[in-house]
Length: 250
Image (tube, rainbow, N blue to C red; front, top):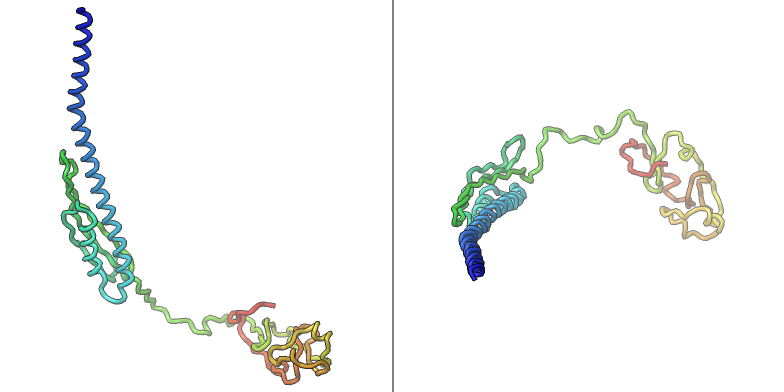
């Protein structure tokens, strides 16, 4: 009987110690969780401030060419910081720069804002903090360069050899001395064989001519047959610089 009573006392003492430890540790655990969550919320408020600054700067860059957008952007940044988190106790604009030389960038826009954070937690651990958000970019206003625009003569290579083109019918450019430039026309009577071997000229619309009509062809390099009145037969080639021609080479 004595042994049974001793075991019962030991069990009661053990269970009593667990209750005491639980009563002490559980509140501390809850306090730690609440404190940790408050710190996370403060970091979330900081991330929101960074997002607000970047978003408003993007808008200010686009509006910079119309009006002093840094003023309205700073007001929106301050208001949105206060709205996005209840932990923000106060927000103020510290520095404003608009379309000025800053950190080696011309036409720069820079905004700096201070934010006071306060979170209530049982242990008062990291319950207050100050964060400074700074954002900078360049206005969408182009860039001024002290350079004169290049002329057509500057764009052309004066030492480059000229080439020749046929502006109405030609599809390729040619060097001086090309056999195509010296090729003479040959007269033929239009028949199905000519129609099969050559194409009708879109300039004189020789494709509509009747069989037996006298047509003119370039036997070596020509791709079409032409009527006597066709401008391709009488047109002179135009000399151009090779760099100014954007046609197929051949």
